[in-house]
Image (tube, rainbow, N blue to C red; front, top):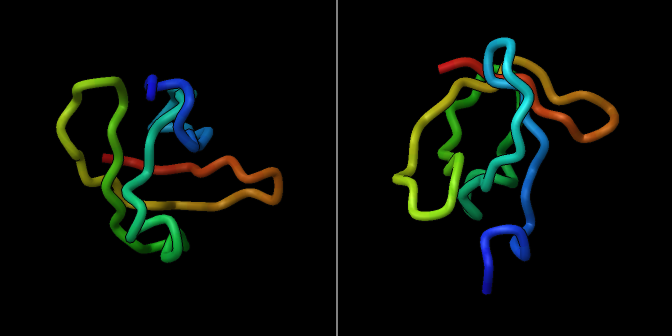
Length: 64
């Protein structure tokens, strides 16, 4: 399975729009004020980000 075959989530980290992989256990708790784990690229380690907003179109706004 390739990186782009996974269920990727559009996210705006600060001012940078990206497509990231959200940890499976954290996908259910994506709400403003919650910390979630993401991977920004294939082979990356998990990083924690703070969810600021989840927009109606599914885009997540977060900060480090």
